[in-house]
Amino acid sequence: MTSPGTRTAGLAVALLLGVAVSLTACSSSQSGPAATSSASAGAANCPTTPVDVVVSVDQWGDIVSALGGSCAKVTTVLASSSVDPHDYEPSPADAADFSTAQLVVVNGADYDPWATKLASSTAPAAPVVDAAQVTNTPDGANPHLWYSPSAIDAVADAVTAELGNLAPDAAAYFADQRAAFTAAVQPYTALIAKIKSEAAGKTYAASEGVFDYLAQALGLVNKTPEGYQTAAANESDPSPADLDAFRRALADRQIDVLIYNTQTQGSIPEQIRSAAEQARVPVVEVTETVAPGADSFENWQVAQLTALAKALGIDL
Image (cartoon, rainbow, N blue to C red; front, side, top):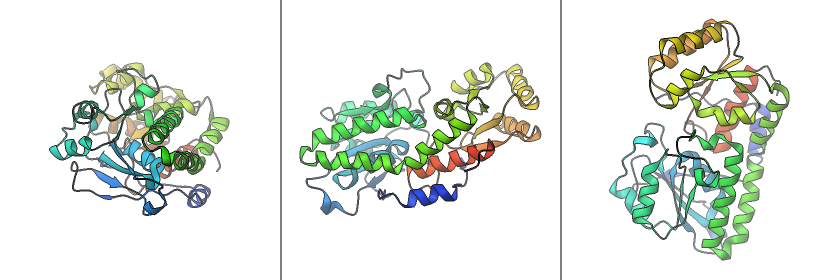
């Protein structure tokens, strides 16, 4: 897999640098090959013993680390774009991490089923925050919930509540962390509002549906041919007719921007990208997992939204 370079606007960078929430991470040899463990260097500021939290994937791991601050020891099992969460086989070290977890956070919606099973078998007493359950997302639906602004809020609230229940002496601390997280993602929420106000009704198509929740929040209209969407969601090849429909829509400029997941492998997405470039339809690169070089969830998302705004002709 390859990932795009991180692109940020000057204003967004300045805003982000002014936010007093930081995430620090270091490699951990106690979990799976892509696992990381994070905790704030200011652990002395925590009024109680930090809560042990295990998170299945880094898209949620960054968020949970920000919410927990120095009062949570967060281990993220998959913190690398080189591993497909759907097919991951947890190691004995992963099971050991889960066995000592006081709180488990998973995506759900059949995205990381191994994590739910491991939590059930090795940490039956630990509460589980399942993003799909929190947002009433059924199995079979689009599982990329970290691209949904409303899902992020719902999961953040659920994590904060569970942390406060597990460490009552730090409940006020966790409430402050929740407020600080809201402040930290302000550049992200501001960009969403701006793009929605200036580009609602614009059309997009996507090589894969990872960005769809955010596109909906932006008011963009999905013009990806239905047959292609179904094939991509099922990880199967679209029919020649579906590919032709996609190329025609691009050539006829029915699509204002193509959203391209750079972590998708295969010749078919590359063909779609080439067709967009030939039709002079702007291509915006996104990633399914946190992009290398992005030091926080909000930096990752701001970079992609900035690129999208530019592609849609919005001045920032």
